[in-house]
Image 1 (cartoon, rainbow, N blue to C red):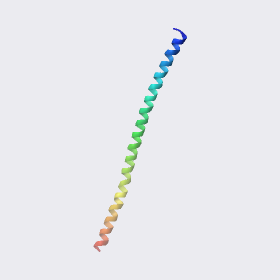
Image 2 (cartoon, rainbow, N blue to C red):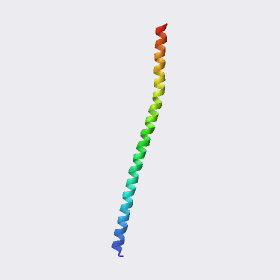
Image 3 (cartoon, rainbow, N blue to C red):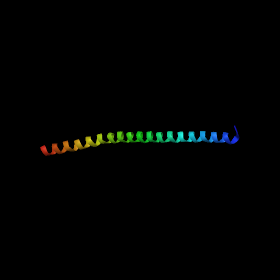
Image 4 (cartoon, helix red, strand yellow):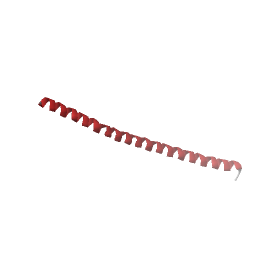
Length: 68
């Protein structure tokens, strides 16, 4: 095996590794994005609970004022 053949073989191997790492990086980026979206949705849902309670409290207060 000549030096040029060895160089070509190693270059092909490194290109394959680079392609594989790029693929792994893209998949991890997609997972990270999905997890961030899920966390955001969960936090948004938690934010609606106090807002809903406050709206119900306002409605109950208005009903109590109207009845008196």
